[in-house]
Length: 178
Image 1 (spheres, rainbow, N blue to C red):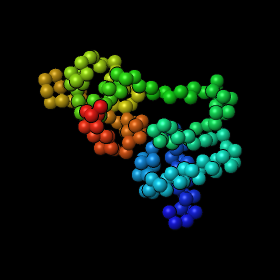
Image 2 (cartoon, rainbow, N blue to C red):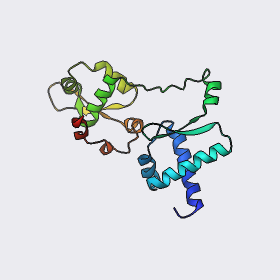
Image 3 (spheres, helix red, strand yellow):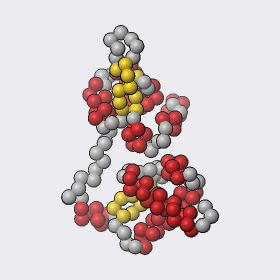
Image 4 (cartoon, helix red, strand yellow):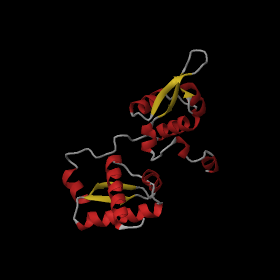
């Protein structure tokens, strides 16, 4: 970035994005949306953190252990307000739900029976939870006997995991190593 005006615009963009996302967001995601380099984004986040500190804002930007940033409230204000607001994340996924979601993400479109074949257990309840949380959706019916429903991921799935596109998922070969 060339001047302070560029940084000011980027700082405002990041502040608005973190506010609207209301969840940890990674640098890669911010960089893609803003069109600025990861280094410029990191620098702008540092400037925004300093700005919020200097005005003694109740808002802070935290960085989690995976390097994602989140706009949240200060621990002091949290202690004052937690009894009035349920700030726990509404969508908490079990290991089983995450496993099912991963299968859908990598194999979509996929039927319930195909998911159960891979997982080795029934997934009806888990699919219901994923549908209720709008992480998966019906994508149609398979051209097979009984016309079973096909499942795929949603834009909420992408948001939840900080992805712009399903192609941003890590290659499945990375998981085969572990």
